[in-house]
Image (cartoon, rainbow, N blue to C red; front, side, top):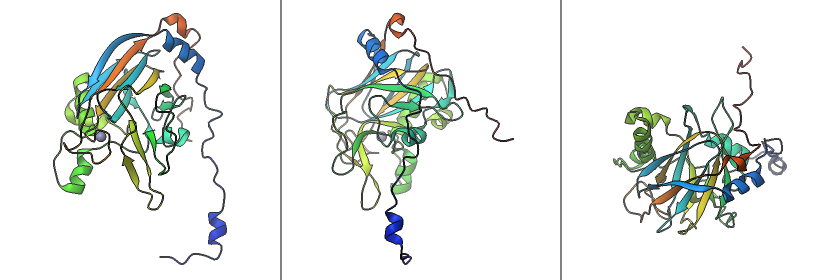
Length: 281
Ligand SMILES: [Zn+2]
C-alpha cells in the first residue's frame, strides 16, 4: 500500500459538500397529490407472481400503489414512457439528486436527454424505518437488479427467474418485443421494499431481511404516461440469497388508481429537459 502523506489526516478532514442541492428542483405539489389520491378510485389490480413480473400502464395524472401481501417480499421496478421506450428511469441520476434510498416527496427521474420526473412518491408506509445502525435503509437506487449474467459469472449456473429476466418477459409480453430486444430496454431498478446499504468497513453492497410486512405499500403519482414492470424478486425478503429458488417468495400487487380531473386542476405533466442539445458543436 502507498505510504500516506504527512498531511493525510487534514486531507481526510475536509468537510463534504452536497453534489446536487435540491432546493432549485421543480417542486412537487404534495398537497395537490394528497387531495387527488384521497378522491381516487381503483381502476385495476395486477399481480406479480412469486419469481415472476407483471406489467401495468398508468396514464399521466394517475396513481399506482405497490402492496405487500402474504409475506415480506422485495420488488424490482422499471418505468418507461408508455409512448417512447427510449425514455426510461435513470437510477444513477435519481441517486445523485435524492440519495441512496427514496421516500415520500422524492421522484423517479428519466434518462438523458429527457431528465424529468416520471413518478413522484406520495405515500411510503416504511418511512418510519430511517437509516439503521448498519447504514441500511429501504427502497434503494444503489442496486441494479439480480440478473442471470452476474449469476453465471459468479457461479457458472443458468437461472431464468432473476428480476432482469422476469422484467424482460413482462416487457416482451406488454410490447410484442422479442426477448433479446426487451432485455436491452430493462434498466437499473428502484428496489421497492428492499433493505440495503454499503458496509462501513469494506464499502460492499449489502442486503438484509426487509422490514416490509403484508399491508405495507408504496404509492406513486404518474407524472407522464407510464409503462411499468414489477418483478417479485426470487430473493423473497432478500434476507439470505437471491438468484435461486431457495428463499420463500410472495406475490406483490399493484393497484392502478385514478382521480377525477377536477382534483388535478392546475397540474401539468412536466416538460422534457430544456437543455438545447448542441453540446458545444
Ligand atoms: Zn431480484
